[in-house]
Image (tube, rainbow over all chains, first blue to last red; front, side, top):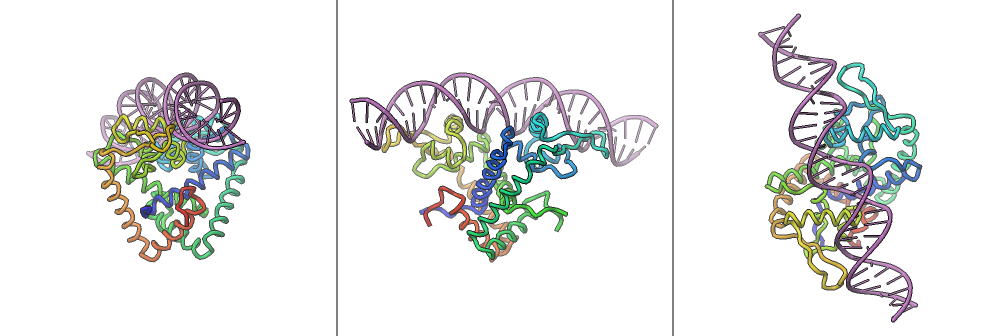
Length: 147
Length: 147
DNA sequence: TAGTATAGTTCGATAATAGGACTAATGCCG
DNA sequence: CGGCATTAGTCCTATTATCGAACTATACTA
């Protein structure tokens, strides 16, 4: 008999599968010089650019790690760093054209996964799943938008 | 306006939060000489012991990585390796007493998280969440038990 | 039995990760 | 205003994680 897995582990299983597929889709689209850790960090960049320390928090890594990851992303031409006009100490990490060009491939794979899941669960269950996850976010995600 | 996050990302957020809490609980219980990657691998060990190649698949790492992680876990006294009686090439990785002694702390934190989530979502939504996740597992987890 | 597949390890190279210390810019408060 | 704690980011350094390639030993198969 298999033990009842914790809900969080069930989530981790599905989330990891999705992450792998999205990463593979990126590689298939020709973005082979980026790693999973780097793409996780890059996924936290807002359209207008984001501070390194914020990226570090979002990706749950130390500032030093974020610096190293951004260094590599910058060297590969996926991001650049510009001065933050509102704070002389800070700099904003922004996606470059090259990175933005890869977004459609990522979004497409995301949607494909979404559709497959919905086909497997049915519309109602999928909606319930999203509702529950969205609610959970308010207690698990410090970056969740104010309700 | 914030974009609608993919379902898989919502899962990843909650799952990561839970993983961090469980790992922190382990450290608080005195298990400070283990890393997250090591504990992820160890989490895949079955009661009777598990082959290294299976652990590698479950944790989604290469065999070489699994070897390295088991090496460290073994050095720290959390696992041992014994000959697999059914196959002369294979060895079984088993949890030691020391590792088993830490399990209650892990399970307790898992339950605490489970309860907090249920309190936040309500019983019905929590049940729906688990139902959907369990169904999803059949298409996202190669290790899912036969339905 | 010869040939092939599988389990695990070793070697070597690169990436990820973080503690500590450091510089520079901010912001607060008397 | 001026001192002083705070914050953003980086550098240095050490450890861990990760994997490609090659290798050994055992198992399977035709």
